[in-house]
Length: 198
Image (spheres, rainbow, N blue to C red):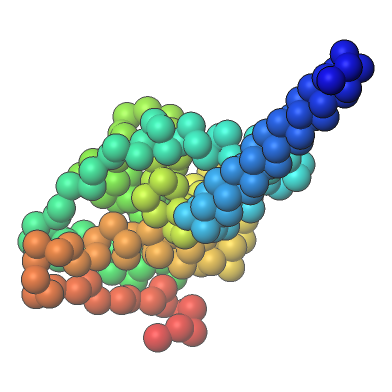
């Protein structure tokens, strides 16, 4: 074989290796991205939007969240604790009609205590707790984020009512029956008065 043929074969082989590597990396990223999208749902979409469509940046951020908070093990609540939390939330919802802003603040404080009791980071910045919650309860963190914004914002009563309803999903998920309870208790749903939901 001539030297020119060897060089051409080497270049073709190197090109094929490079193309294969790029394809594998792209497919791997897509597979990882699909897995993250499936796991994080609306939170994934929110991050893609925040990163102006850059899915790799969203994937990196969610990958970091998984590394940092994936090992968090939710502590179970006793049936008595779950009942107490459910009663407190129901009381907050009853008071909402007369004092929506105070009720939101109480609900925020209750969720802060509940997340700490379940083993999520407490005492740090809200965004850190939200990041940990997103790893385990991704479908509900946007509602919690909305409630937090309403607590510190100037929205009207309707915005506050929607925020309270949005945060209820996370509350229900955190208070939900745990496997060790063998089906003895499920918290009752108490809609926000005046919401029209039952």
